[in-house]
View 1 (cartoon, rainbow, N blue to C red):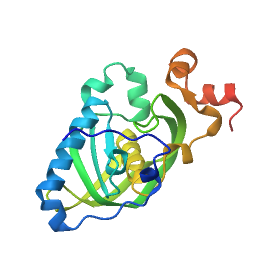
View 2 (cartoon, rainbow, N blue to C red):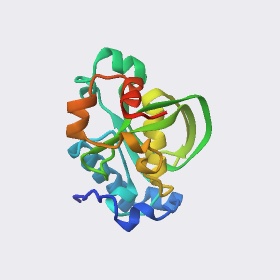
View 3 (cartoon, rainbow, N blue to C red):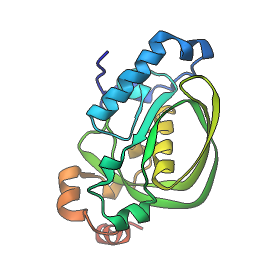
View 4 (cartoon, rainbow, N blue to C red):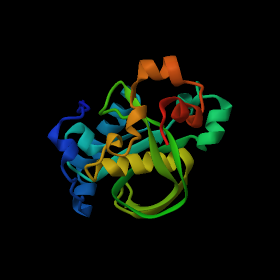
Length: 196
């Protein structure tokens, strides 16, 4: 099935997603949804997609940060963001049970807020308990960019968009980000915009 990614303003993005039962996870319907979400994420392209973003208030998200997405990012930025490829996986009924380390600030975008970006503070490290696509309990310990992706997708399941957490003065179109801010450090950008 082909899925459409809904945009901000759609009520489903502000509706608390419900947990899935083990029977639901095993069902053909949910397994087909997972495959369809994976395809929609690739097509967008993005590194994560939560069920509310395709109009379904379910605690389900797909994640993959492919190596090809990182080719146009400088080595310095990859190191600063602690960004490495993350293989495809599914998180169901996730809970962040621990955050560790400092809070880091980087630009984030969202497939449901197309064409925009802003600096968002996030915990550097998280521990997440969830179920995988087979309904088995797993624990994920993540740092850097992977931790950011997890926090962003779990926020979607809790009616939170990055615009609720962003440093509002940094909100920009992607064209303006490319024109004015690409290649600059977060500190330089914040100083230019008078953000503390």
